[in-house]
Image 1 (cartoon, rainbow, N blue to C red):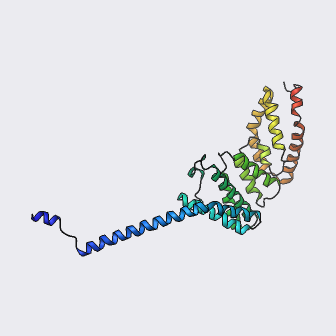
Image 2: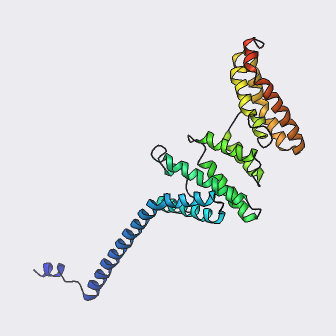
Image 3: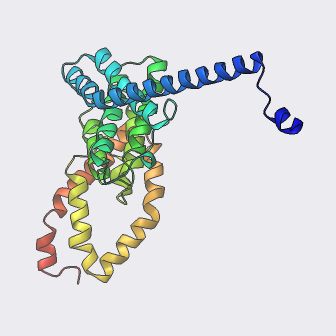
Amino acid sequence: MSSNSASQKKPTKEEQKAEHAARVRTKIQESMDAMKEQRLRDLFRKRLDVARTGVHSFQGKKAGESAKAFRSYLAILEEWKGVGPWGLHPGLFDQKKDFAELLLICGVYWDLAKVFDKTRNPKNHQECVKYLDKFIVFSKGLPHQVLAAETLRKYISNNKAIHRADFVNAYKRVAEDKCFVVTALVDEVDEATLYRLRDFRDEVLAQSWMGRGFVRGYYFVGPWIAAGLDRTPRRVRKTVAQTLDWAARFVSQARLIKTFGVLK
């Protein structure tokens, strides 16, 4: 009897107070967690409105307002996914279920890169480069990669980029094109040149053993030529680009060459 009564001994007042305080703390923490989850759910539901505000501000050329809205949208997603600043990456999303969201994120990073491209302030330049990097991360390996590369090419070709070298480098990383020389001269060549030369490769050169041999040889030396062009003065690059433009216009008639069997 004495052992049972000892084991069932009532807790002291201090122990009761400590137990009560622990229950109160648990309830407060649960309440705070619930409030945080609800706040996150509310923010997540509003994220598209925030992004839409950024798009409208960007279209209205209100750079500051658009940057603020876009950053808020990204911050919501970062908190939702439990990552820190700059921590978003495609692996956090379902590429099929969340494709629309991935495309929106890519577009937001692109618009932010353009916003911060409009100033020569070193700090803003760093921001521009970071946003370009994230644009690439949310483009490569995804269904819209080709669209992303074309978007970059047009921005560069239209002479809109202030930090031109950064956008050219981003294009090379996204395009992953084997037309090495034209890619290296993306800021100089006519926009139709790449497509004309691709067509010539696929519809003419690829149809004969001599043409295929030429293509293989180009794939071997092309990267070396492109690397050399990256280091040449702009006047030389423009001359090479003009030559390529002329050649591309000439070979756009390649179907006639193929029809007459010149390369066979």
